[in-house]
Amino acid sequence: MSFTAPTASARRLRRLAERRARRRPTLIALGVAAAVLATSGFTGAMPVSQAEASSTLAGYSLASYSSTVRTAAAIAVEDPVATAEDVQDVLDAADAAIDAADTVESDVESADLDVETDIDDIVTDDLADAVGALENTSTSTHEILVTTLSENVTELTADVREDVAELRSDLDDAIAKKKAEEEAAEKARLEAEARAEAEREAAAQASSTPVAAAPPTASSGDNSPAGAQAAAYGMLGSYGWGDDQFGCLVSLWNKESGWNYQAYNASSGATGIPQALPGSKMASAGADWQTNAATQVRWGLGYIAGRYGSPCNAWGHSQSVGWY
Image 1 (cartoon, rainbow, N blue to C red):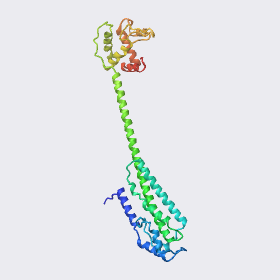
Image 2: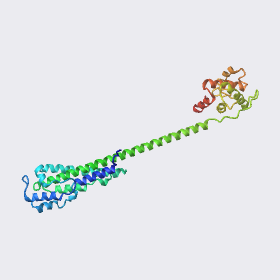
Image 3: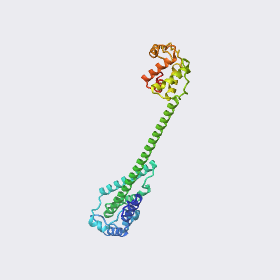
Image 4: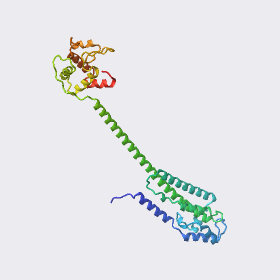
């Protein structure tokens, strides 16, 4: 047979029922208390009339008692009579419990969160009534009644404290839940921003990567830009590069020289299609480096292979720093 733990609502209802049972008004007990007070004093108390005792209780609702009130006879036999100091301690504890209830209720309203425990579950009216009755009862003339009222105030105070603790716990749980939800939302927002940024960077990189140009048709001895590109395209395979590298190479040497074999940078001395510095370096690819675009292309491809590994790597470096 499985066991299912009671819900918080069920626990509250059960607790409230138990409290009602403890708080059942005992008219007989108080009748005995009034009768005892009317006929004799206890431990030196001055005798009082039944009418006077009843008048003392007139402003206090019996339904607000929080504990099973023991009879005056039992109190007289078993319990010491409350002293003025005892009564003050009881009243101070009750005031503190009422203040704590007011504070937690204010905190719940300020937080504006859904909590498991209803604010209305904390009933301080009964405690306030009991405090008023105790304050208005003289210790010197109603010792037995003061002791009984003190016990009622003490039990009501404990009930209010229990309710305050439960409501405070529920509020803390609600605040923690809200914080966790906010942190999760912030994490999701940051992750979405990171994905969007990555997509923007990928799109920017894709737009900056040249689209491979249509392979040119080679013609022997053609030093025009088209002829130089045709020669370069024919040499790619010997370096292990595919057609995807040709677009990067076209963009790189368009930027450097416009594929003009006679290009010369007067400020730096860079020469030819690959802008070799100095131009005489290209003699390693052929003695005709000054007049043959294909020779310049061959030297330039060898330089790119040795320094960058591929035309697209060289183009990326050129975009980043302005040269290759």
